[in-house]
Image (cartoon, rainbow, N blue to C red; front, side, top):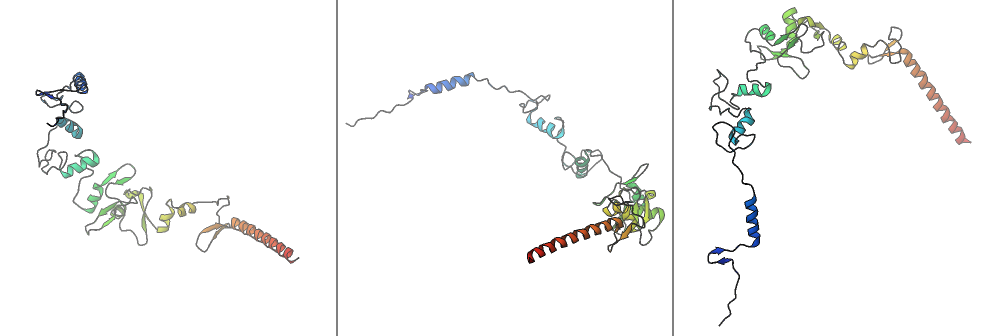
Length: 267
């Protein structure tokens, strides 16, 4: 008769015998506080509180729109009164949504579109103040305003303002802003001048140097002391004469030193 090996088991008459570790874990679990389901703070909502005192639905409405009571806008309807366009985001149509995203107000209008003569369209996009008349339309990267013409091309807004007030710009001349504001279209601040005058009135290095009355050593740029080089730039005669003398003295000293070394080598 073969021997039967006995294996321990925790099953006794259908009951489960737990180890001391299992009993300790069960006791610790019974000591933990049970979570309490808190309802949403919105009246009439029985959902479990998620964050900020709101359920997940009302919290998302509060997070996106600032008000937990704002419900979804019916599909296809812009929330702006009188607008019949299809909604795109936040209940606004593409037009009102772009205004809201860029300016913070879906009702914001920078200027009213005017369909009329060139002069009417010009002044419709101009903000007139006591000094400058600021152009509100499109501008290039240098700050000059541009307005579209009937031919399909664009023209400088300040040049159009000058021609409407004074007439065509003479050949060889260009418009200069006396106020130094490139976005100004006030005719009183515009003058037709040559390109050289326009540049010298600016703030470029050539313009700043042209306005100097003395050199950096204090010598005056008068008729007797001012010379013109081959490039057309002016220079101070006194400084050039001094630089020539100092350069000649250095060259004579170098030649004397070189001659001395040659005599030593010969000996």
